[in-house]
Image (cartoon, rainbow, N blue to C red; front, side):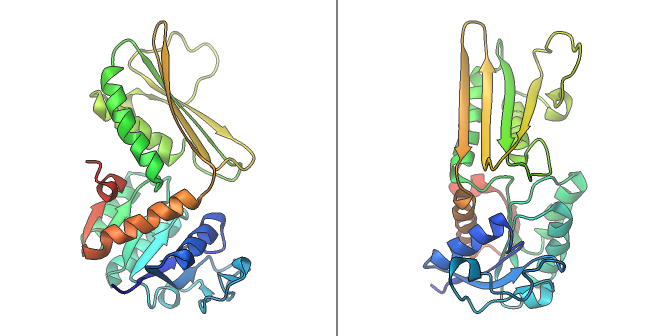
Length: 268
């Protein structure tokens, strides 16, 4: 089996560098392209330079140059950038692994439309552990649907621009679906002042931003006399990178279609 030919978006960023390092260390993957915004000082440099390696690849801002040899494209950037990349990949049959968060409904619809032309794994969190946690939350929610208040607390580094995190929102969706609620109707994303008593049907969210926290998520099921907390903590972005490669391997025999990490991990 030939190595997967992979290009990386945001190659000079924190997640981009981790993806590059993980791809270079994998026996079944080859880094063939790297992209970044035109104003990045890294344009024209080798993405392996910070790792002490020469990859023979240059970081480009032009999609045609950066994706010329790519079969797969891993994107953990911003919604506006990912949607721009999406159109090109759909036109050229490049498979996408999208870990970008913060899409609105129109953005999600665009991804679904593009999946009619190429194969896409789209998930708010590529970590294997997080997705197993999602499955545990689905199971727990069915038992804690009555008499327990549900709160989701997430913490990330100071540079994260969207809140709550895509992972926290997905956790809320998984829980709401499991107990027959609509998160759009029961989600509470801010509390201040005299709020009145808690609506027992609500699912609350709390957001923490600070330092270099990679990503912590806790779901609290609080009843009378007991509470259950299900927590996942990321100490390194490498978990997202390894999950992204698993997603790429999953897409190897797929030509079109929209998938998530439940599909990749067989958690359906």
